[in-house]
Length: 137
Image (cartoon, rainbow, N blue to C red; front, side):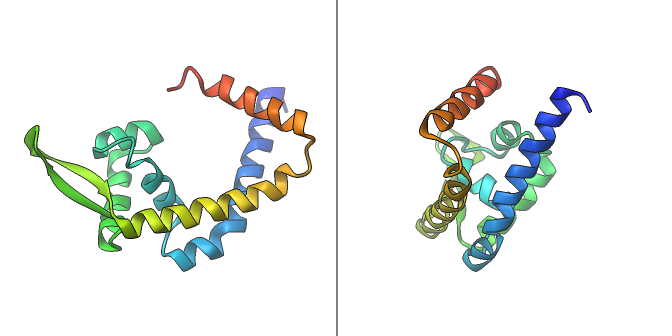
């Protein structure tokens, strides 16, 4: 296996392991993993098309996740005062609570993995990931 594929595979395994370790707590919060990622971006991307682009997901999938989040009371759609034809997305107080708890869960679980690294290694990992993502945004 070439180096790029190996790095990608390791990264995927790590992320999957961390997310799997959070699944029970996410379930208790009423959040599916992908709903968690969508909910986490609503404050930055107020429109479904922006969310789909940001998350690199099909618009139809984002629509399904948003419908679920609206039904759970985590997100609401409001008329955009600047363009009455558009609906703007807003995280509700319940959505904020669920997101905060989910982020704490994720952070706590990922911290257990990061604890295996020295402080300098953690800093280097963060620097490298930021460098890789810098041109994506």
